[in-house]
Length: 394
Image (cartoon, rainbow, N blue to C red; front, top):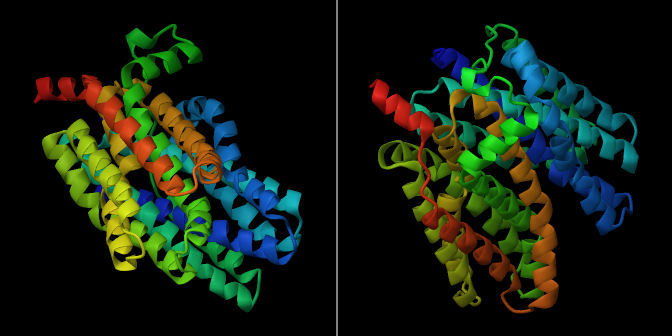
């Protein structure tokens, strides 16, 4: 197994930060610009799904190029797609043109996220894997949280946020050229003769439970950003508090992501996941009894963020314990698909709950999802192939 040096890890984490920054900027910025141009809320929401459509479209085709060309070349290709798309946004303000650009960014982001995730999980020792993936998650979350601040610059020029974000991507592209290329683990004897569908089936059989946190995080993130504001306005929560509650969830996830990663290294991924799902379920359910006590709402959102804000990174780490090295690329592909499925279904299910069940509808959807994942994870007792092998070696 190749060694993941500190300098290489720092570069990969910085790239993930800038990717999160560009995604965090695009979601509110484009929504605002489309709203100001008279685009309907339905079409505005459709445009937002373009990023996830790009991820899903790229997923089945990304494994083979990474094996052929290595991590570095795929990351550089993804950065080029994102950079060029960002610079093209100001050229033509048209719905379908922006839809296409966001889809291309989804493809590019998935290329660099897939490559960096596999690179980090494959080359991290078991006793540091949780910490490294936690830092990876913190970098993306911090970038995603800072990105929306760029919308303020649109007052001076609509093109300025796109140019600045594209400039950061150019810097990442330049730095990435100095990193030595590496390749995923070569196919083992057991994998010889396995076609793509066979590898997918093998990953699902071995690690399907570790894909659920990725789905849950996508569901949660998209529901909070898409459905919660609607629920809040219909239930008398002041709009000023909505703008505070959502960031409190993000802050909670950033503050606690590293401790959870370290605890997962010490106490086991499954055990930490169970605690996170239970506390998240309890915190969201407790909001039903918060009434109009906004400080209590704020505290509960912060606590929920502390625990369920790390679901994706914990799920990726858990998956890397359950799979042999040569199946990690396929595992990361399926994790990306699970996240996208959750991101697309979250607002739809959340919206249906709001229309069908008036009081507490949003909370029912979130708490129900977390409770389902908690029960499934508790019942399932996976055996970590990599973890067992690494323990035997040590």
